[in-house]
Image (cartoon, rainbow, N blue to C red):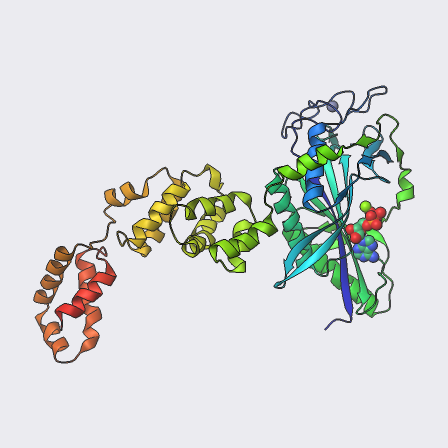
Length: 476
Ligand code: ADP
Ligand code: MG
Ligand code: ZN
């Protein structure tokens, strides 16, 4: 048992999925030729004036509302000054003293119980460009296509207590952003990023310890690894009565360790001041009420509803509602008749496994809820065995096939016909007189032998439940 408690606060940057940039009409489209999605505004030409993107404000406000934040009806854009080659303006347009939203919270399920994580603030800002160092040994390249793309920064309270909790919280944020349809949520591509602040304190103490800030983690796994490493590093220091130095650390994915990047900057280093080119942003009560009304049912509420309406365990409900597409798919299938728990089991095992292994997007598969329900019906009615169902599932998911037609054509339909089964069973008994005699003499174990013979004769297509019943009857 450690004598210390880890304290973690996350700063998450989410790129908003708007068509155009935050302060100009340039396209945000990813993967274009470098420096083609640019204009005088986003390249910081003198005299060019920024104009706020309404859609970006709506998206940001929706996230703030989903996080139960108080929205400031008047917020101010500020210049955050620093120099970097991919920041042609010489400053980032962000929000400082009056951010878009403050004082929210989000609940996560951690270790089986609900935990409330405070959201200190959510503000809007524009993204910097991209420096590319890997193409050439002695040269760096700058691509300004990303410069000016809208971001929101979501700052949590120092309320997370472990690497697991931090990852759970991150996944929850990502899930909500994707439910709202406002962010691609892809950490590898960098449209959902996070910096992690970590400190340790002796158990039972209120005052926070000295923190470090971790950067450069581009997957959930990296976040977990970096935090585990950093918590251990600080614990080793403190146990030896060595101080933790406040600094910014870079996670190195190859070694799984963190290394110092720079001393931690303070807010005053950035010389924040209100951007003179942008008037304060005023949001009307009506606009906020309108956005509130447009919010979809969000994961925590959907999860509770899935437990209550479908009688699903918490685990199933959590998994099924993590992604909106999957939750909709589940509901559409259940609406066609099959029992919810059966659908849930198939999704959690076969469906998710195939989707992950083959990197599929469910909404693009021809395997619609109708086809899914029809497969489950084929099994439930005994037309095919559940073993066959599992076998053909990957095929059905990948190809444009109607389950009913497919099993018919492939000869997968089980023999459930009474007279046909009786005929086959009688044949089997006739062909094995020795075993039949032995069985009658008391060797009851031979039942499985007959069963095997029937399956062999029918190439596995006899309905096993019916065969069993019939055999018992004939052997009486
Ligand atoms: P900065 O100005 O460096 O961005 P903030 O006060 O905005 O610092 O906090 C940034 C993040 O760091 C927040 O998520 C906050 O919860 C977290 N944080 C602040 N102090 C600590 C600490 N001592 N230990 C862990 N996390 C902290
Ligand atoms: Mg900060
Ligand atoms: Zn532009």
